[in-house]
Amino acid sequence: MSGATEPNPAIVFDAIQGYMQTAAIQAAIRLDLFTAIGEGATDEAALAARTGAAPRGIRALCDWLTVRGLLTKDGSGAYGLSPTAAAFLDRRSPGYMGSIEEFLAAPELVGSVLEDPAGVVRRGGAPGLGSIAPDNPVWVKFARAMTPFAAPVAAATLAWFERHSGRAAPRRVLDVAAGHGLFGLAFAQRYPECEVTALDWAAVLEVAKENAARAGVSGRFRTIAGSAFEADLGGPYDVVLMPNFLHHFDEAGCVALLRRAHAALVLQGGLLLAPEFVPEEDRVSPPMPAMFAFVMLLSTPAGTAYTRGEYARILADAGFARAEFAPLPPSPQTLVVGVR
Image (tube, rainbow, N blue to C red):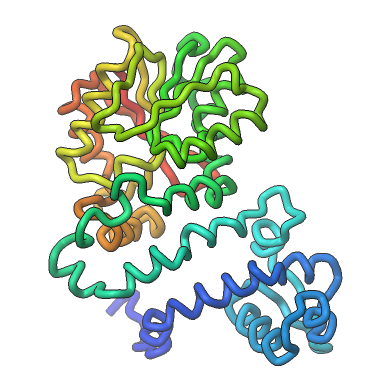
């Protein structure tokens, strides 16, 4: 058959031992191994001395990372960084994103995912409220750890607004499920007259406040502590941001949230901007957005990765006049736009 490949048992082993990938990358990040190599500690002895780890441990870890393509190894036994490791895992790089393991590999997430995955598939969702439980402390970890991933997406969202919205500088912006607050803060830093209101759980908002202070915009940064389904949103706002939030809920939940956002927007030209993982209609491409539906299956009662067609229907049901979609490079995300 055209395009067929030979059976390969390594694919099965790889899938079953995926947790080994987590263990290896987590160990390397926590030992700051990639930075050590980038700064010139390239052999087993030098790396052991630099990291305080056993030579046997360093050798096994570095060889594993070499096989996986994150390190290189020459004939003398010296290790080097792959382009990906140099860009994202060497702490000296402006693109460093090692901190994301603190959330993505958090014990409370990994433990719940591996506890009974077959049972979750049978039920069609995680037991209880999963990661969306009120005041779940994991979202404080998210707010602190995921800024390297969020910052370029926030910048790309602002860039889309400036290039394509055709609207005047926004004076009031609401950031729903703000987390670290970077999406709203991007608007506050770009537009000196813009006041940003961030909504999230109280403990999470403390992180956003810290980031607002660092950005020098505390005087124009307001907060609303509570549930996005229940809190008084205030308004009217020129822009409502809803980054990486809708995928936690079923369609009815998304419509309910978006109706609230719609009501909080200015009557003429108000915009909803929601960066999301959006797969194609076939639901198996592109890889990361397509696989995100399974992530939501394992961590929420009813969340998923919605296609463009589904988002267009959801936005229409919530009262938006039209939906637009735009890629947000270099991230794998898509900007979902609702026009009031």
